[in-house]
Image (cartoon, rainbow, N blue to C red; front, side, top):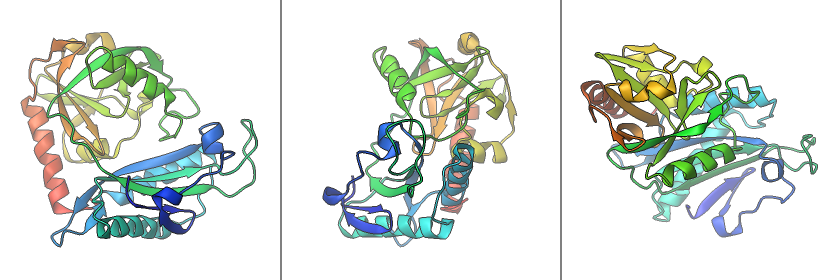
Length: 284
């Protein structure tokens, strides 16, 4: 983690950073977050990539949870800027920066109190992802009808359990179906498949997160929404994962079985398209 962290309007040393044990984010996981990759401009100054899209999604998540965010986007941008600049000056070159908003200090129960929300901005390193991924299908299902479907919530225990299941089977990512048995998403990624020269991805109605990298590719490539049964995943020609830290990652193994093309031509097109967007702007 970086040397300096921003908490509720104050930039402090990470060693001195504290959150109340009664914070609703601690007691019941009542919070939202956004993680952004850090990129550098021509002057080697760090920037949060696609910050506008991330803050837009943060607002959507907050609205869905009726969670107040006392700061406006300009103030959040300033907090991100302060953290990145402070840690860069301390030689703690960040690979990612995270904004977390919790329900603040509240009662020991599900009911949210009337205290101010806690806002935290922190940066840290970003270990490199493997060039190719192995994934495992998990036996648990996303509920596309859930009150928190599509929310970037801090309640991540379902993902923790699923990822552990995948890792125990030699994979680096877990893939979920939804309640209909259709492919939904990874524990920390969106999923694209290629069949007969056409790109497909699960629709947002599947319960998947509206990923920022997913959004950029859908805007710039010919991508069709589809409900693909998870048990037919091995029939696809190619498959790749997207997320804000992994960008576009080809998948070569599904439950230990090799994908036909990894990367295939559609995956290579997605990789180059995303790289071009990132080269053109830090905030596409």
